Length: 192
Length: 400
Image 1 (tube, rainbow over the protein chains, first blue to last red):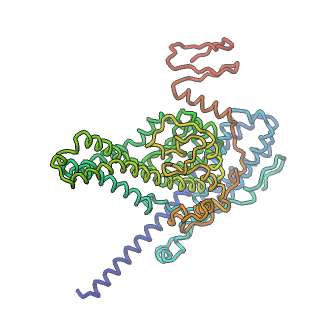
Image 2 (image 1 turned 135 degrees about the vertical axis):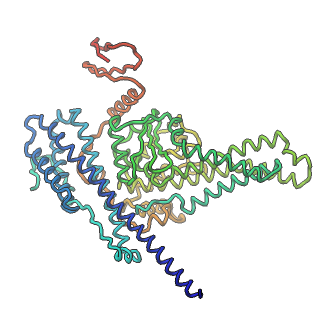
Image 3 (image 1 turned 30 degrees about the vertical axis):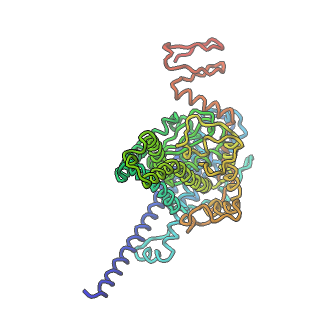
């Protein structure tokens, strides 16, 4: 075979190898995003499971604000219905649940008996830790999405991504206002 | 930014290679003085191979049993277990590491395990009592990154190399002295004498050089682990304040030794007030690590840590974070002392934490804990041989 044929074969081989390499990298990143999302789901589900226990424990205390408790229960039900309705809807519902929960725990501050209750303390540790786990898994998820999106947009991997149909990932954004709000110790009603 | 900082960065590889060459040199030199350089080489490699196999398969269990670590479950100390799980999630580790407590008032922690799927984190009871949640998170984040960046594997490789060199040099120099240099020296000749001298010098210098290299690698990994901890927690102040507490306590860890020192979060042999910025330190000076963490004003990314490092080392050459980790990283914001969710931590006081950890250690060593109505806490050994026990305070009897 003439030299030019070898050169062409060489170029084709290099191109194919490069394509495979980039493609595999994209698949790995996409799987990481999927896996990170599954992690969030596990923690969200755990929070949903903890709330009935919390409500039961707090209910036992006479004249504990009914409105606060109901808001938490309601927010939990809404959040459970939002499962599977996409990242955006779920993030919104979970953000509201977080807000309702932090208001509840702020109200508890005014019940010294309840605060000293062993059951409640154990529950509170689990609940706070779950909140932390949710925000850490969200942090990891968003970082994974950023990484993946960068790869699908940047040259030259965007060529491979375009040819093989890699879509952008969606960030898990939480309603800033609902979440960042510092709960005041008052009889504040939860936002509808 | 989540691109793993590969432990095979060029500088680390060069340092490890240098240790490897030292090992080969000493093996060859030793063999040569006894007749066959190649035989010496083979012996050195065989010793090294065996030690590697032991370290790879048994290293973590040896380390954990030397330090008398006790494994704990999720219910034994929910706070610690939860923090480890939180950091596991933040770092994106595939599997939850085992959690251990070491019954020792000294303040320290370490991570071990050859890969992220088989890892353990251990913390002394003293440290667990002393840190609040943010600080604990910083420390565990630091240990997680040792696991995630495979520092444990790197340091194991290095310490095995170091150990082999030390052993060969030790036996080699003894053999040389007592045999008068083997059969070659009996033939005499100036050339043989020079080689003998070189071999002796090598045997004295090699262990020292290997140790210095080992320490250099260890120091570098510490900075990286601090940077990763800040990234995972988004809260460098937590680790900074934990390190401050660690620095204030001069306690030496009973169960540590020179070879295991780089595994710990701070050097277990430090003495208060001693400057550890010299070549023989396994860890960078604490004050400097704290200063870098507190200088990170803009954010929690590797780039921010790198900037802070350069600011603290004014005029120094280059940063500490490898370029591969810096590339493609977005801005990473810091968080306030509590995570964005404004949940109040159920933060136990120092006394409560001490009691909690103390009770756990009693329980783990086979004691049963019974709370009496009068407020006394009875700790009953498992081999008491009776079905009931009397409270020494109020005289009530309790079933065991």
